[in-house]
Image (cartoon, rainbow, N blue to C red):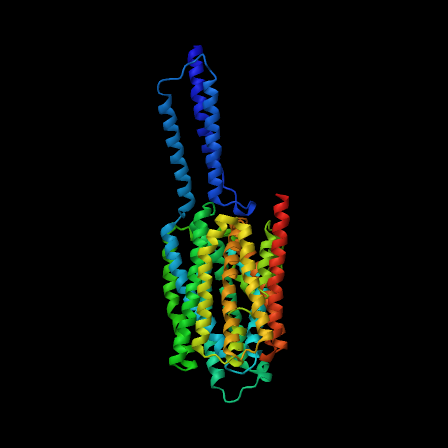
Amino acid sequence: MAVAFELNKQYHLLLLPLFSLTNRYRSPSLPLSRGSTSTRSRLNDYLISYKCSLRLSHVHCKSHNSIPFLPNSNSNSTSTSNTTSLLNLQHITELEEPAHPHALFVFYLSCFVGNIKENLWNFTWPCAIAMLHPTLMPVACVAFFSKLAIFIGGPLIGNLMDYFPRMHSYNFLNQVKTVAQVISGVMIIHALGAADFCVSSLQTQTWFFVLLLAMSADKLASLALGVSVERDWVVMLAGAKREIALAHANATLSRVDLLCETGGAWLFAVLLSKYDLVTCIKIACGISACTLPLLLVLNKAANHLSLGVLEQSPSRSSPRSCEKSHSSDWFLNPKKIVKDGLMAIKQGWNEYVNMPVLPASVTYVLLCFNIALAPGSLMTTFLTHQAGLNPYMLGLFSGSSALFGILATFVSASLVRRLGIFKAGAVGLLSQALPLITAALIYWTEPMSQGTSLASFLALIVLSRWGQMSYSVIGLQIIQTTVHPSKANLIGTTENSIASLAELVMMGVAMLASDVSHFGLLTVLSVCSVVAATGFYCHWLERTTSII
């Protein structure tokens, strides 16, 4: 009996590390925001700890000199190591394999179609409005009220999306977006055909009021769709606990977005070089209307391949409670809408402030003050009227900026693997700040009429896009892994609402300094915001590292 007891004790000692390893693998993985080590390094730590425990158990068995080793002890050790290797391989495969791979592929196609339409329109309307008058006023005014609508209505839209099923809200927002873009195109065509146009009388023009409403609805729908894609849908399809698969999905989405940004800019440049501006606006509106049925079909296919995961609402509440809280009478009660909107703003602000990685989000908000030294409506107006670039060169500039952003999606994964996610974010911010500081110095010291100085100025802005997109991808994953899915839309829209407030302030400054010659003031403010964001993040990183 004593011999049998000792033999059983030896078996238990040999199998103890294996049980501890499987229990360790079954525990939920730590989110990336809690440390600076990557998933691969944590897997190595697991393997090292297992090897140490295996050696300790082997030594402990040798200490029982009265009981000789069994003849098949080597085979048991080999079997244990093989089982461990299989468990390790299975765990890595689970981290790398998305939860719904086929649905995720269809989701990428849907994002490609939607982003092509979005980026083509984002390049069409600034060029069209910039042609109305050689000042910053029309473009800045439209952008100002669009950002104001996002700041006010963003939290309410996010709160509604958290209670309604994903599929219904996504399809409805796509329909609103398409209608808003078509109405905006009609209003711009009407303005271009008007005989007399005066900037001082914009507020009295009916078409301009309708244009502001349509553009505001378009931007609100774009905000809601972007948040649902980046914070909710991709997490559901890739898997919140599958960190490697989620990182690959985020990088793929960024590449799709940037590829569409490149394609949209070049497509509009080619169209504008062959056709007049009115015809290009009609083509952009036609593409927007024709892609809507395709988007609805692709979204339905993604939901079918994910076994109905996207039919659920992000909130834990049941559909019945959703119907009770937001019935049809709710949309006909203005007081209820205002009350719920204020409550949504308060709730979104509280959830946003209590985020464990709030400084990473504040850094993103500070970067949004940079509206001058980045491809956008103000830069398009400046290059059109002061630098005198043709549409083909404008498309080349925007496309090159997007290509550098695509490069950042490949390099950022390597930075995270080598430096950790937080230090990689600091490298991205520094890579954005240094080129922009140099670009601002060139603007103030060299005349933009010279080809060399203008080319250097634009090249540095293109180079800064590498750092901007690097931090965008890294910061997104930091927040994704710390925010619960039931609060993803609310916190995401609140963050974008605060970011819109930053852009709103800068657009207000652009409206006051409406002349293109005052563009240098906007460049100084933009550089200061990027430098402040970099310093704030690095200070937070230093404090966090010292505490750890």
